[in-house]
Length: 97
Image (cartoon, rainbow, N blue to C red; front, side, top):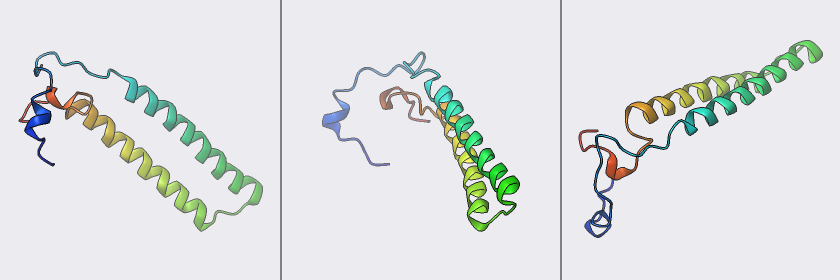
């Protein structure tokens, strides 16, 4: 991580490590809504390819693989948001974090 210039850090508000202002559960709600949409799209795609075309190609396999990586990345981002202070301003993140 790059060091913050002193001229910028001086203008930050006072740190509040005990009860920081967070962005709430907006990230969780947005990610859940988008994962539901992506799940529906991938499920419809797979269903259409298997029932209508009766063929499952390499493009379908890569879509399913990308879907699995998307679920993993969403999980990691939500955990980092909750456990590592991604939902706080930089001045409210404790130095040990």
